[in-house]
Image (tube, one colour):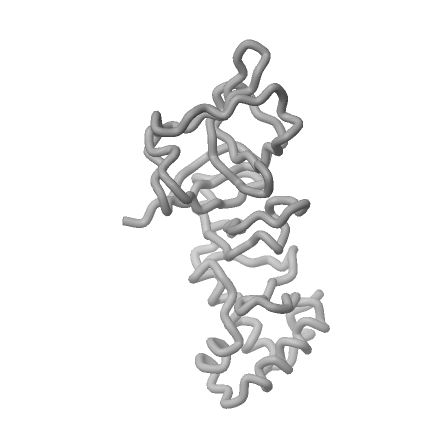
Length: 208
């Protein structure tokens, strides 16, 4: 795929989409594109988006206000060329891999010199179950994909379609999912067959 396949106007629209996602972590709405680029009609924007999609640069997701997915594999970089974009996970769709587009709320740009390697994604923390290790409600944790867990690791676990961050403990033949807050009791399992390990904690991001 070559960027020159787009017309000048399609390239202008596509460049704005890339820039907006790089700067904000999520794609623009049709209205934001129209306002920024001076279109009076939202239908004109939608027509450009459909043509850009036909050429393989984006995928349009029905029913989402920010339903513009930049095609996987397109060489996106942040402004200083030293960042790496990873998906920010929202609700977890049943039966879908955690980084499937159905689960993605936006994107987070990470410093490539700190977060190295592949298989990274981000998850916004809800609640106070991990405050004992300094992870607070609203923080964004950085996770490296992993399908198994070692004793003592802090991992993202999928339980009944919900993603939660817990410490993984093996003790007396049982598995314990432990919060880092004494107000929350241990979750004791006889096996891991009822849960899915999605990844291991590698970092925390907080905006003051």
